[in-house]
Image 1 (cartoon, rainbow, N blue to C red):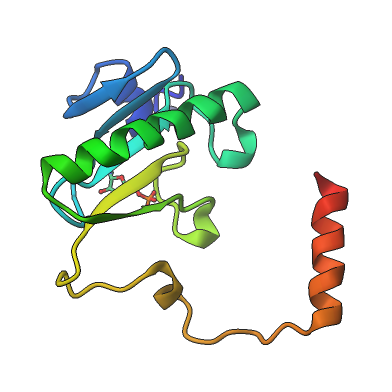
Image 2 (cartoon, rainbow, N blue to C red):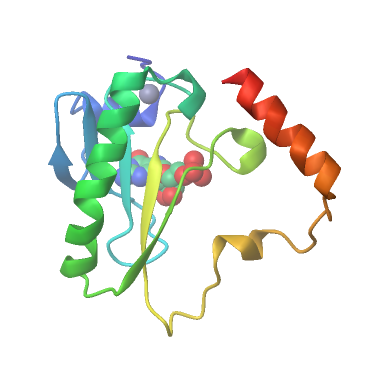
Length: 141
Ligand code: 5GP
Ligand code: ZN
């Protein structure tokens, strides 16, 4: 536990949260400043900064809890869809340095846009560079 971390304090029960589901290694609770009613966060109970830091078994449990909670969130707030996303690192907008997945209920008339709307331009990557990048990712795994 990182005693400076707000999410570790939620896991410890030191600050309150609207917990909606829990497993041995993961917990889901409502976002305190929701983007939409039902906005839920899913986190590992242990403190890890980014997805990259999470051990395989814990990552599987976090994603498993996301998978379990998504339909429950949608049903609870009568949403036909959800945006599911991780801001993975400060440069990507992560503000709380304890890995967390967002589940944000969506409706066709909520006036909001898809994740692709985060980016105004596309870099126009050519076929050769695409092949090189794919090979580099394969080699790094
Ligand atoms: P990030 O920008 O790091 O991906 O998202 C952090 C999220 O945590 C934000 O949506 C914010 O509203 C939420 N949050 C920050 N502090 C608290 C808190 O004390 N309790 C809960 N439940 N959510 C929080
Ligand atoms: Zn933490």
